[in-house]
Amino acid sequence: MVDLHISTVFQALHCEENYLRIQDDTLTGTLSSVDVATKENLENLVKVGENLLKKPVSRVDLGTGVFTPVDKMTNEEALIKMAKLLSREKHLRESRSPVGKVATSK
Image (tube, rainbow, N blue to C red; front, side, top):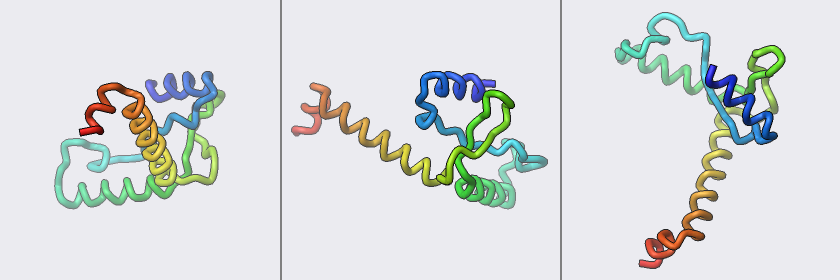
């Protein structure tokens, strides 16, 4: 429900490219339980995560409620892009902040 709401807000503000949610709603059995911390289950969860990174970026279609691919970018590429954007934003804010200037000038 939260994903649908946040996705709607970002789309209404025409900044949906700034919202990225990566999830797998198809997990079943021990993979879907946060209480099973066996080596085998953790290794399987790593595989699930690696496969999710290879999938195309998808967003909720507000008309149908179904996740649909939005472009040819993979989740991994989108995460890298988002990390670079956030890093640039952090550096920009630090350079404009009097506190940041003091901290970086030492």
